[in-house]
Image (cartoon, rainbow, N blue to C red):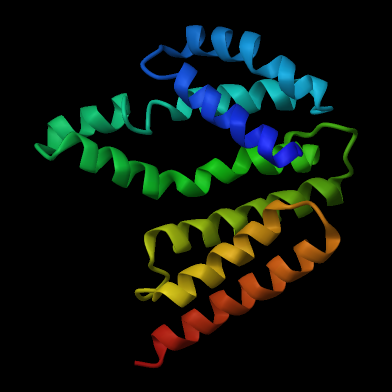
Length: 187
């Protein structure tokens, strides 16, 4: 399926991008991984940006995590701990390329209307907000495990480009945000 292919491509790009500067990173990932996405029907610019994005995210994810390890040395903290924390904080960003593949209007591909672009941008912002809340475990107040799962399910529903999942994602996501805001402001 497309999702499994994208997931595998993401992992390959994370491995290929480890410890490599930006320009060689793009050359390597675009020549090795992008053609596979093109064969799956992903638009040219979207496939190239997908592989480039995850090649660059390799600087944030362990075991190499150059950016996180540099921050760890400045903070005088354990490097792997900072690397995993950086990945946890950035996990919401891992959603954007998947949304671009499922909804190319996010990257202004496929002759989108203004409404389609506004819709996908709002959808992406809400999904990132919910993923971030689920990953960090905080939204105006600490979230318990059930609340984190609800936020993750709502965000995941927004990533899939089906009308019913969008309705579920928007409904559950906005309800979750309002409920959490009310809950945190009662005190």
